[in-house]
Image (tube, rainbow, N blue to C red):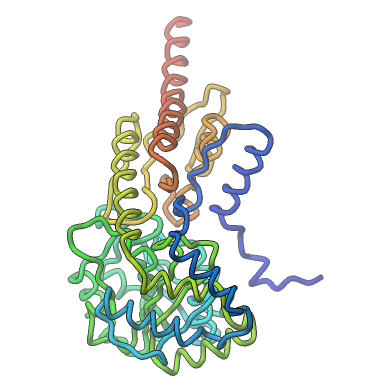
Length: 413
């Protein structure tokens, strides 16, 4: 079977691959702690599960409108007004099988051959593949650690061409946790004011996991002059611990929503009817669960950062939000392992930590940031403490191995 080049060139998700490897090792009896997947470990709140059960009992198990039920669209409109100060109508809402599908449908609906999409790095790797599959070309804009891994206006301007169709902004960012302020979003908007053909895809799926004193700010509100060019993406997966329910949504111009519905009608048709009923309950029901989960993750990130920062050669800088910490491991690279090998890069470091410490993390190379690793916070305090113990012991052994070699050299002259 001939496989299209655009598909053959796609690499498996590093997160999925490492999570699968961790599961395989667990099945073989290894005591592996997997901190690879960015997924809340909390159960979906009870009132949401009850809503799904009631929907089944009412027989809501048939096809719905291609891009979402009226009830869910109305709930999304209310959520955007309540939480984001975005005023819109149900005609501006698209619902899909997760935020990933929403992003992909928008790209498929808008990109022609050779169109470009600016993707700031560090990035969620799937952005690049989705742009490629949709027929476009990703243009990576490097964001430096000294700028908090946030895209600078001058860097954006250097990336823009007459073929640029989208800028993707992810705040809070996966994997770094970077949160853009209103002023920083306006700075990017000022650049885009000179490029009327460039739209903004504002991926805000981690908005509830913002730990800064300043509330999350949506791009469409921060840069109102560009509001008609902003497509806001969100979902229920992270906010309500509903990753498996697969409901994401987007808010944009009516013509984009119509085009996306055409795309979706030819691939998946409507999202799960039962999941849509559950999402309505999530969005309009009690929101206390959101704050409780956010507080738990806030405490966990402090715990993990404190523990990792005491390891020689390791730096864990906390940014504004997210479901993980992004850790600088460059200080432990190029060191010899107790077994005689050399940990030359972050990919080999991830393999070393999995084999030596039984801890699965995702190498930063997967996110366009070599030398770093993403460590998810989806575990109890006790699990995270144990994981940090193991990482610390494994990293210490890299320095011990160097000390042992120096001692041998000194003894043998």
